[in-house]
Length: 406
Picture 1 (cartoon, rainbow, N blue to C red):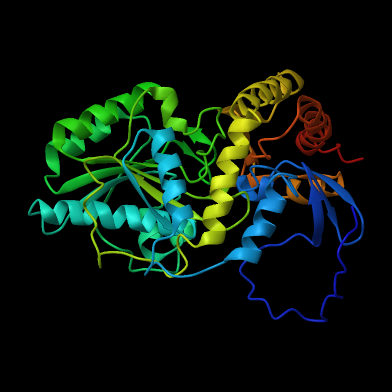
Picture 2: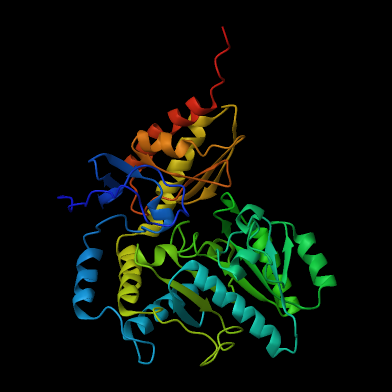
């Protein structure tokens, strides 16, 4: 594959300094491989942070997007957008829910969910609605989603935060039952089925079922943030489907467009009519290019059996990591489902990003000490074995005791 020409880097970048970037620039990719501007090759175990569902330069996706760019990129929500209707129909068929609103990102999808929760409360006569949220949660970086997030480091410097959130620990049914008994203004429960940025912490099946029951008993909306764990990543279309429940509101983004910016909020009957004309909107949301990316992503996933691949390859990857890291001091836990895996260490391990890149591997470290693996869903068994082969020595070397002083 011929790399496009890359202009020389400026002497000093004018890009705002909001990211702790590694000193490399990616040029192009194919499948689960990417190359930087110096020609170095990497196995991509990050997938754009769970975004590149179909990997890079997928032979079915690329011509579809090229055709759409030549046809229509953007119009306006003043008019019907047939691709938007097609994608909404598919998402509702796959989820069992009723309708969808489209935006541009997970943050925007979560903002829309919070607006639905508040208006749902106001429609019931609750003047100051409250939403139950979680410790270690991450829902975005706008002021409202930042307030719902359970990370003081992310919130620092941006107060005052938005009111109306009640925070509880994950997988603690008693804590949410206590809220039900003491906070009459609660209108919704908002949680990630698997906490991503918080360290790859799954909600248990029993907990999800208990929360669904409590929402039904108290007339709350169950809002499940599937921005990172949805779109086939766990081996089901949506991670909550393993628990056999239905949410009332489901924000999506990341992998839905295979790299094209997209977000969606899919609603069930209790929430589907909460918002009406004038209550919410988005200039770019639901544009034809993003909708074509979503339609094609879901079609290709179904055609190529990528849910089954995520389950099979993910299980093999997790088993390989467990086998090779068994008994290693400093490895606290390996957890996750499908191709969303976290390896928790007993110490901060951010420096592993640079070490992994030097070894030809792209990974993430989240919650300070959790190595996060969210590769494209096309990852093969051979590539999973290669990932283990490259990553395990880095972890062993990182955790090795320092040599005693002479």
